[in-house]
Image (cartoon, rainbow, N blue to C red):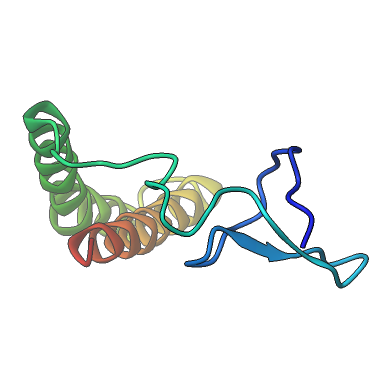
Length: 107
């Protein structure tokens, strides 16, 4: 097989190549015994700390900010448009941050 010298974003298999989706032809980008193009061996402590902080903020949003917004939206003394907006913002905040918290927790 002919080895391609063009690099692109297509995923590579364990042999270092893949099938061109347009032509159906299999080609290589690196030899099987070569090291991967990018090898991550150590996670930066700062990255871990930042992820922990952002996870804590997500929990605050889900369990404090979102319920306060929804509660405020139930107050009859506020204009109807504001009440509706607060409820939508509260539900959206809880959903978005809860979903991201769970997704990051699985990493």
